[in-house]
Amino acid sequence: MTILKRKKNVKTFNDKGFTLVELVSVLAIMTVVFVGATLTISTFLLKYQELQKVSRLQTEAFRAMQVLKHGIKVNMPTEVQLMGIGNANSIEFTGNYAEGIARTGIIIKPPANSGDLSVNDEIKFYLDDGFIRYTQNVYGSSTSSNRDNYIFPDKVKRKNQDIEVTKLLFSPGNPFATTVFKIVKVELEARVELFEDKYHYVNYETYMAIGKM
Image (cartoon, rainbow, N blue to C red; front, top):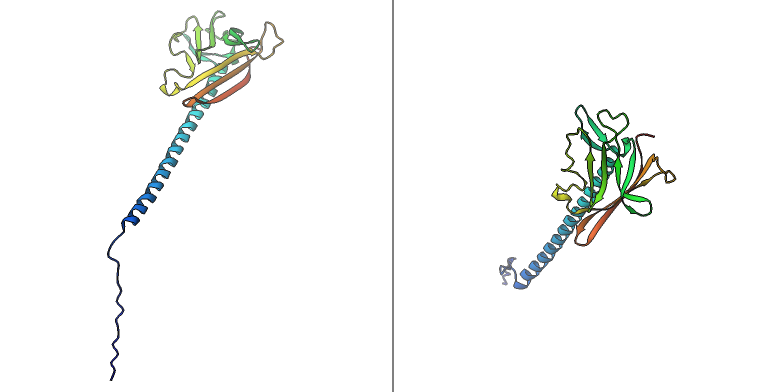
């Protein structure tokens, strides 16, 4: 009589662990992924910093154009006055000539109906070594004419030390006028250094009517 013995299914497991080749392969893959992720993050951060600088340049340049138009605050004994192109009684072009009849500076005379301001008072906007600056000669004003006279970029703020004004020009908006100017053409070009020897430029060109038409 033949007795058939039933074999049990015995599962065997590989309890030897990972081989050296497998470990090296995993480490190589992880290194490639890590390097790729690092490069991606670095590129993103650099691009983000560039966009921040460009945005700051555009914002500050636009603000400077608004200051030229609406004016500098002048603290008078009984009131605060604004002296700018948009509310001037008269203007005078000054500074160096550039691109034909355009000049690098402009002198603003007091606004019409200006209260405490006199006809001899004035504010001058001009380009100086990469900065838009102003000086004022206003009798009775408590506003200092020798300090904080940087309009753009703000020299006090360290974050703006990478910005430079490369062009500021004033010219008659009505070029056929000889003595009475009613419109001023203002051109502004500035740049920000994104990184070494790479710059982003911004350009503004606009016409501003003076206060007394």
